[in-house]
Every structure is written in structure tokens, then in C-alpha cells.
Image 1 (cartoon, one colour):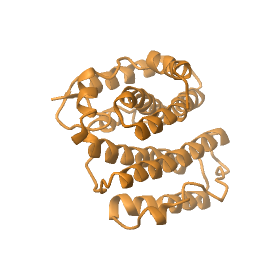
Image 2 (image 1 turned 90 degrees about the vertical axis):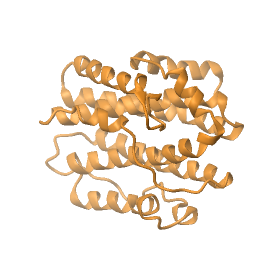
Image 3 (image 1 turned 90 degrees about the horizontal axis):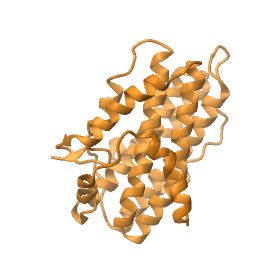
Length: 256
């Protein structure tokens, strides 16, 4: 179990990075027992989407065709479950690990570091997907697809439309999504049952590392100071978090 001092150490750079904290109004709504199914199902889908984002990123920019196919096959059972209602916990058991190497394409301008960081992130997100599903199963919360909220769309809509700036923006956005997830797990944990609280606290280290990995990769790809762009997306992210939002989700704003 992570100690309060360790939690503070993890959250300190996260809170400095984010331009606002989660509003108390969202926490009050999120801790209501009747909203637990929405929180868990949306969290489940957020883990899948985080993994997909990393997968699509390295498929587009960094890996050879054989590795792109391996990545696609890796995700298929999770996407079948989430989008086509095919499969169950047994068919997903142990699928978060990948046995084959993911190799950079010969003409890729991006380093193996990009691939390695994203593959590790994918493994962890898919493992977390399964862990959320276990919690839902224990509580007899059935899975059903729910539409995405405005949060990620609002950030992605502001990306540059030319390379390498598009990739840099994608990586900065990834950093904000992971940082906000980390902050929200910490805010929610004290209001949850013990098993969920322990699970959320156990996620803090990986979410914090994901945010740092995305940010360092953005700096590598840009090859120059990205602080202005980071600040730009920080303002957009803070507005999405701190303004009224009619669609309650894990990353939604103030409940309208």
C-alpha cells in the first residue's frame, strides 16, 4: 500500500502540471452510490481508449507492418468485448501481455524509446481494464457501452494539422489525460469502498509515469521548447474540467 507521504510525492508534480484541480461538485456527484456503475464503466472504457490511443500512435508513426498487425490483434479481444459484446472475463484473462517484439520500421524518424514507452503503457492500461471488469463482476454491475463525453474530443479538436506538430500535440494531450486521471483517482479514493480505494491508489504511480512519459516524448519529438503549447492545452483542459457539463463521466466537468 502506498503511504500518504508517497501519495503526496506522486501528486505534487501532477498538481503543478494541471491548471486547475477537480471541482468539489464533481467529487460530490461521483461519490454517490447510484453513480458507481457510470464511473466504473466509463473508467473501463477510458483504460481501453488510452491503450488504443498509444497503439494507433505507434502504428501510424513508428512500427513496421508486421508489428502493426500484432498490435491490432492484441487489442481485438478487448474491442470485441467493449464494442461488439463478444467474450467475457475468461476470454480476456492474461491477454494484457504481448509475446512478440514490436519493431520500429526502418525509415522511422522516431526512436525505439517511443515504442517501448507506449507498449508498456498499453500493457498496463489493458491490465487495468481487466481489473475494473473484476470489480464490476464482484458488484454484479453489467457492462453496456456508453458514449464518450466531451473531454478527449475537446482536447483533440485543437491539435495542429501538420507534422510533427500533430504528433507533439497528441503527446501533450496524452500527458494531460493521464495527469487528470491520476488526480481524479486520488480525489475519489477516500470516498470509495476499501477495495476500489486501494485499486485507485495503486494506479497513481503508473498514471503519473504515463503523464511524464508522454511529456518527455513530446519534448523529444519537438526538439525544442514546448512550454507554450503545454500551457495552451492546459488552459483548454482546465476549462473542460471547471465548466458545466451535462454528461457525467469520469473526465467530465462540473455537473450541470
